[in-house]
Length: 370
Image (cartoon, rainbow, N blue to C red; front, side, top):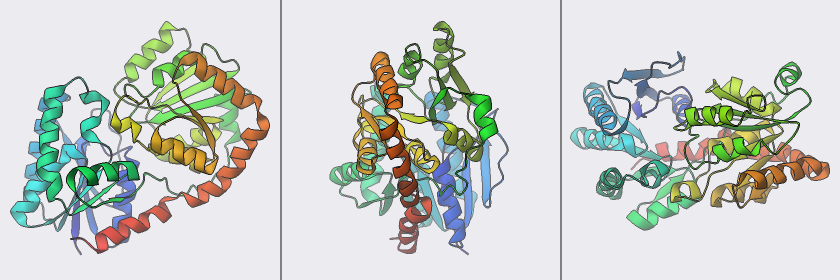
């Protein structure tokens, strides 16, 4: 049995993309080892494959990345391996070096345009370092896939590498029935909005979503997950005295999170066009909303708006501004006929966009590694 070592830089718990891929590889009869890190608040995980989580001394910035990549290199150095699967640019260098030393096949999963992320916009020196690593390694890669066509085309044009596509599509949700007791407890007779995800970072519309709640009535907003601005969001909620209208919860296990998603009346995805990474993003949450059959309101980003408009499952807004968001949401809930049409469309679309269908591409990639 061939062993695949999968590397990520997060704590594994909420990374549904990597978990789905590891599970598919196990079903393909590979032995899978997933390596990540352990945080002080990391919850216990129980998977069908082996996991290794490293505790790091440093928590942020350059020393954190340097420590993780160094420790990952030595982990990979001494573990038996047949195939290496690197997730995102922040794990690529040690995987590439080990693949060359041991002449092992390397697969690269690019979850986003890493060098274009908002967190690097005002850090030109750090951005240049990451770009140098990408520029050195990417043209040498033979097995690459990413999350959508826009990013695949970007990399193909830049590095002349054939990049395949595996979208962040959720597994088919078998139980779509809403928990009536939970719904009554968390929203009662109010409408419920949800913004979910572990990457609720700057320029992703979360601040405006909270500010918007000043202008909507009989509605509650749930923000569930985590991100770089999570503490700032909690402070903003307090400053605006919106504790009774905005509920902010830390990350939940996926099955538990989806119980809230099913109850929500509207899912939000509000990335701004401040960088190419957000412009080309196609977040997990969009496909979670689809599986939960929750209509959505999304910003006019290329990939997300295409999915929503093509399938007629939600609304697209051009400007992320609190009062305009509130006006749009009030209009959405006042047009019951259109809302129910999108609800009906989601029944069909949720059967179309499933991981079970999407994983066929993953199987083809690993059956034909270069």
